[in-house]
Picture: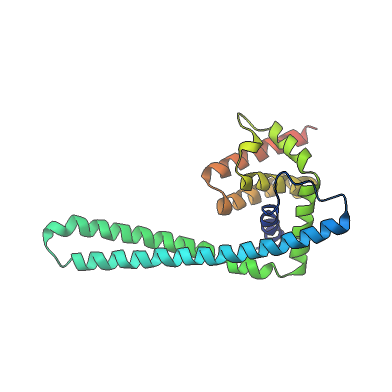
Length: 215
């Protein structure tokens, strides 16, 4: 996991602590830095909670799968009339086991992310990206809104708006190649948004980068 990837995810959690109506944190550098340090601590607390919640959910799904498989074994000892029910229990148990293992696999990356967030370089990069978004959020929103098709930026879920904003500053201020920034934004959407959000983010960023290249 690259440092920038971790910093971007931490910055996303920091932005989630700020109201969309809050003024940009750029006027008073000392006060802004103090505010950003507070946002960083809140983001770390949010990430810790997310880690515990994800691991608990994976454990619950695996436990439920185990119980359904046990039920299918017990019913298998009954009459032939119970065979459809046995098969259904077995299918449900295997499905829950697959979901639990997939969730557990994804969740195991979160504690590693939490440990990496202790690195000063990553924290500094996260603060820089958060400051960059907050410093030009109004302009970013206007330009992102201009490339929306049949939709408005304000109607997107907050997490999707912040993913788009981060990708935009990655490209314009941190000189991340557009294709890389778009792929990383989609990865964030896979973790924090849904399929509709992922498709929307991918499409908006492609149009945003195309419009920026023509300026």
